[in-house]
Image (cartoon, rainbow, N blue to C red):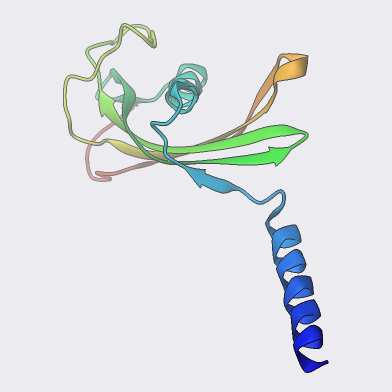
Length: 135
């Protein structure tokens, strides 16, 4: 009788644990899917950043997560580096000229593929070197 009660209790506890996890963000390897890199690049094309009159681009993806909602919310953390581009930011043409991180960025996108819907929900970039002059 006691073992049956414990078994039922353990089963119920396990179910509530699973229900808590549904819909929660799950961490993923940011290099497991090119989508994460493309989202970081797209964020910078929508909100370009400059350092000393030069645009920055994605240097390194540091983490990513994926959350099932009505579609998916993708969160990507990355660093940026200075490029040679001064006049206009072009994702695939503005390559890093330095391996020094200039910004630490966090972006989030909500995607509903079946509706061809992609919306930036968050864009936050902080300078790594606050004492440097930048645009």
